[in-house]
Amino acid sequence: MTRPSVDRAQPIPPAEQPARLAALTAAVRARTQLVPRVGLVLGSGLGGVADAVERPVAIPFEELPGWPVATAPGHAGRLLLGTLAGVPVVALQGRFHLYEGNDPGLVVQPVLLFRELGAAILVLTNAAGGVNPSFGPGTLMAITDHINLTGRSPLVGANADELGPRFTDLTDVWAPRLRERLHAAAAAEGIALDDGVYAGLLGPNFETPAEVRMLRTLGADAVGMSTVLEAIAARWAGLEVCGVSLVTNAGAGYTGVPLSHEEVLAAGAEAGPRLARVLRRFIAEL
Ligand code: HPA
Image (cartoon, rainbow, N blue to C red; front, side):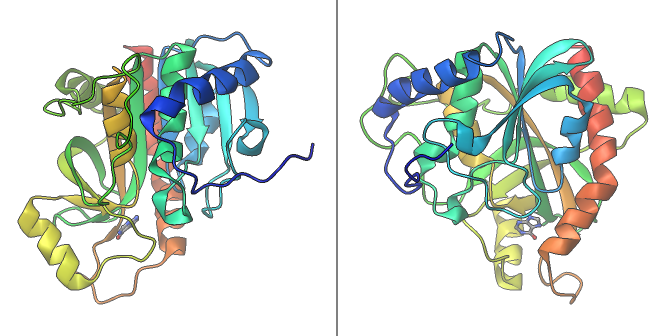
């Protein structure tokens, strides 16, 4: 199938989302009638969690209207609809990042689509650097709150009142109820799960050691290049949000060893199955 290439940078204000979401929903509904309860975004190296999705209908990003191919290595770039532990789910294997040159409105479109398809709960996952010095590689961290340091918001521009309010409260963007459920699931699986604050930066460069020290002073426990815009948009649109970071490396400057994306993917491969067990039980017991 050939089609005109997508301009990832084209501004998509909230007011333009409803028409775009209608086109996306129609494209998905041409392939499956599955109504998901839960939406999952699977971050760098964590796409393996998707292997647990049963009888998936898989749609490559580029086959959905307005979506470009995923460019980040370690991201498959597919939308999956299927069941997990018998519960209907929609999962994004890969995501759109700001650092790829995507407009914030595109970055958040998948989670808005989840809601459009019927999901009420959103689970965001990501790979992150450890800012809390006690969070070494392999640490799983339930996100208690975030600090948006991207300088961007997906809610800038004319609002779509039918999707969400002009001014969105973020007091409980990371739902305490769902975090408790994540902890219960982890405990039942015998898997350690910490709590912490996620700082979202633009990337794609990793931080300097001075920036990591600054982030610690600001109250962050982990740092990454995703998640915060998706959480904001999801809350705006009325989804209940939770998330887990996989700490793949100590933050820059802690060990003296340079950071690399290969290290991030390797830690994802090691810890992915652990996170998959937590999420499977979390979803089974919702
Ligand atoms: N910084 C930012 N993003 C990341 C890191 C990091 O150290 N590790 C994995 N994603």
